[in-house]
Amino acid sequence: MRIKNSGILLLAAILLFSCDKKRVFDEYKSVGSAWHKDSIISFDLPALDSTKKYNLFVNVRDNNNYPFNNLFLIVAIETPSGFTKVDTLEYQMAAPDGTLLGNGFTDIKESKLFYKEDVKFKGTYKVHIKQAVRQSGKIPGVEALEGITDVGFRIEQKD
Image (cartoon, rainbow, N blue to C red):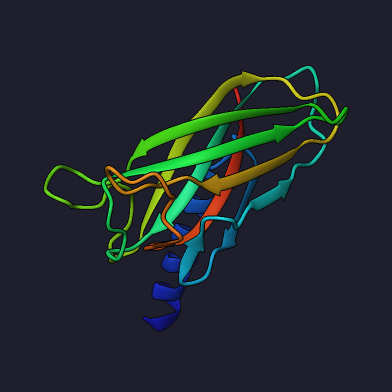
């Protein structure tokens, strides 16, 4: 009976991981107990097929210590020539009642945040992500953003 249960568990794991055929890059980096406002999370992207289009996502893992409804990010893509395109992004992270959005069964939620679609790459790129959260009515940014545990970047091949 124990071997049968192990076999079913192994089969379920294989099915779960084989369903992610669009993924071409998916990496997370820990920010520790709080994401400092001057901390930049960087990803070196692999060389991708220049004839294909890709969708880009910022992934965030957060927990119940996250005190805000929204998350503001500054995302920069550095091209092989050194040109950098910078975007300031806002994402909703909690429902109006304060319940965190995202996937997960525990207090840690994982959010796949849409960034760009139909992107073509020529060469190797770098991505830099920085938090830009501010408290309402205050100009300085939040020094140490609690509740964010990991930041990731994901690339999926477009159909």
